[in-house]
Image (cartoon, rainbow, N blue to C red; front, side):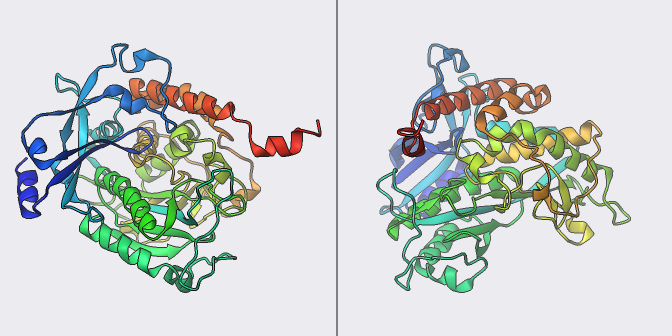
Amino acid sequence: MQRIDEFLKQHRITEIEAIIPDMAGIARGKIMPRSKFESGETMRLPQAVMIQTVTGDYPGDGTLTDVTDPDMVCVPDPSTIRLIPWAVDPTAQVIHDCVHFDGTPVAISPRRVLRQVLDKYADKGWKPVVAPELEFFLVDMNRDPDLPLQPPIGRTGRPETGRQAYSIEAVNEFDPLFEDIYEYCDVQELEVDTLIHEVGAAQMEINFLHGDPLKLADRVFLFKRTVREAALRHKMYATFMAKPMENEPGSAMHVHQSLVDAESGRNLFTGRDGEPTALFYGYLAGLQKYTPALMPIFAPYINSYRRLSRFMAAPINVQWGYDNRTAGFRVPHSEPAARRIENRIPGVDCNPYLAIAATLAAGYLGITQHLEPTQPLASDGYALAYQLPRNLEEGITTMAACEPLAEMLGEKFVRAYLALKETEYEAFFRVISSWERKHLLLHV
């Protein structure tokens, strides 16, 4: 706690946001004065917070967290304390870990799930390295959810009407916003790298520098808050929906990943001869085998599956290839020491802790089960059949039947997560859409 005390004094903090990421990656917690935080009194939250759906409901199964609805203790992680640059008064935010009153971790906490997977790698002397890439849309403020989203107005006074992939001018349309985003990220030490304009109208991508998976998950979690907050200050929305616009591509969270030796730092995907290793191929094979069962994590909402369609810059299968963006898993051209795998399947709407844990879990299983991948794909992946679940209901069924993943991620977590997803799916299924009223009301 010494680091936190020094930070509070150095920045003359008056208020603390004590936060935890829930299953959706939403920040939950409490805001308190500095004196309250420094008193040493532990922060408590109901365990049920972890299984709150994105609509604010809860699964009916009370045994997921205990029928008595008990509290959990939230313990601050000193390494995560950061300034909140958009706050009026000097305010800090601290990510907390969740434990029971006996000190044992709360198994359904997303941070705990990722730590559990990383512990398995550590037992082997391996250290995963990841680098996420986040796509998102800027949209005009939309107060009526029944109306389609529209691109915002930039400095020219006109919204984008066509696709401007990699256009510098299109990014410059929103220079004041991105200056704020970079400043906010710098203050929070989020270590973002490049910014590009993606394929969609007012669709952007931010890349992160590679590093430790837990630290990167924390940064992505905080980055989403940052971008949304900055956009609001410029009278627009930033959305991390996987498919916010009907005729535009969706938004992904591509995750570059590799393994290094924990002691030497040597890339374990490359042998002494510079060629790919058995660990590289086993990792790829694990991604191919287990990704279909991980889709409720990679594509957690009904909307998520709208992104995964042919010819829309998103994969539809579990093929892999060298520098092939039509495959689910791309191996970029690189020096042997930088050999890595890019998982292109997760949507940006996923929880970063769970998505990173899931992709690492699949790779670990592939290595330890000595799996063999298919041959690399050198052709168009969109010409092949779908190999991923086409909807959330199918994804839930597939994940529920996969015992190895339950062992990797924790059986209690998987049971709670699937119950939450089933509750969200049922809530959506009750809604009658405008499409149904338009095409069915008077014609069937």
